[in-house]
Image (cartoon, rainbow over all chains, first blue to last red; front, side, top):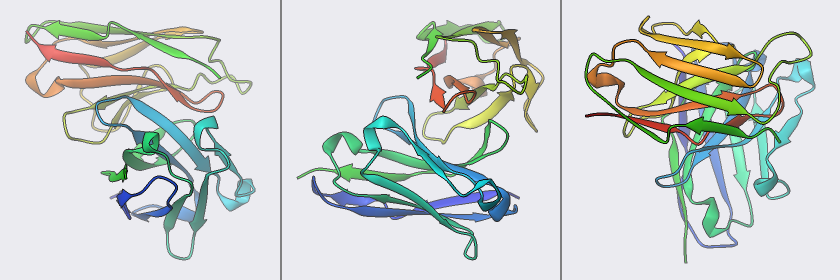
Length: 119
Length: 111
């Protein structure tokens, strides 16, 4: 069974940093592209970015609002995906989901972790 | 960036009746590899999104056959043949042909 479990959310002040984790199980994590998607309270889904598997270069892509502030990384030995968030703004307040991206589809999603940016 | 536009914003439906959601993209979603990476997701209240349909019309594992997808190019449709109470939630289209973007969502509720 594919399982994705996010952790690391919480309350942080504007300008602060936070690192989210996504623990994966039930599939070959090292062979998977992984994405982060966020959802602000009462709003729709917004793609944050992705990291490809090492065979595809392990490269990352980011959406404009987070580019230069957020970094996606992975540790295939721990089956874990990370999202390092720096210079946080109030508009980054959202539930952050990780998802497995498989041939142009996010087929499995975690339950999400809430990040609140507020003074 | 490809913009995805969904209509309607809200769809009140009687139990047992059909529902239809439209999704339009700002440019063709046909990838250079010949595939069209358009999928549909369901998000029930308080839950994470769940994949229903991928590559326009393919039902994901465990998805009831009352859900179907169709379309081509820039115009796509999700249909629920007979709405059940468990279908209440917000439905999103998503494209992954160029980057990854979501439609704004359509709320399906029971009349």
